[in-house]
Length: 314
Image (cartoon, rainbow, N blue to C red; front, side, top):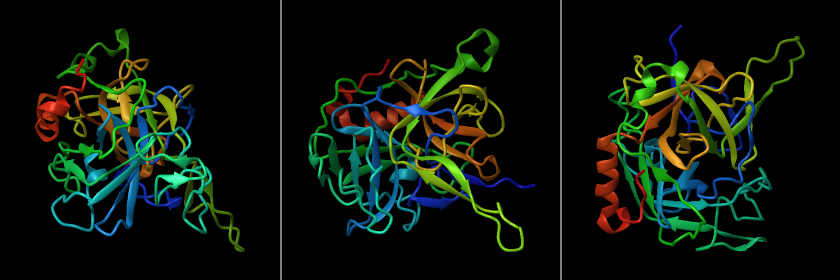
């Protein structure tokens, strides 16, 4: 059976668990209060009309790292970027989201940085009209799909710590002798968390379609390395398994979120990128590597020397 690829971006509260972008942490997930630099980011067209949402991590007070398919505006040709973005750096961004009003009155998600929590602009919320796409264009060039995006925020967000970028080729050695090495990765994001099966119809049929539920809160989980060099990765991506005791996977909405290694560090080695439609957000996940010289050089180029000097490469 032919497998369909899907990117892990996500546009609404309830979605079909079919060919979609990556969303939320599934399986054995837990609340993430450990990574304050990870935020929920929404993208908009030139009229500030919502396109989709993803996960993003701050590399500095103004530079955010995410997936290329997140910064991409799919309504435009050839990988064009969205006109605007807005990000909330809170553990709970949208648990009070009202599907009827399509708004969270507490944080203002997805319409503003203002809610009953107060005006978070420049505190825990930031906006942007400057972003870049490494070249993601609907999986062209697979498996080297260039799934990296950068967002430059207009407001600085002060956090006690920021994500760091792993230096080039950091995880290359994990391709061999995996049984003697640390192959546990940690992921964080705001995507889908579990599926709700549709009830049977009057004819006793059902469960043909699943709906995925998102809390819009930051969750984290641990995953185990599966492969770095098979036909789906070829050194460009990291494949991990989120099934099993103590492990959790990624799904729609988690796209762009950090893959951290070692798991207890803030060191980003990849961003949540894609999966396969028959994985049900519970099987293999694929993460586009940031620890490659070409990617690091591109990030340096688009952010410029001044901003690059504020980013830690470890």
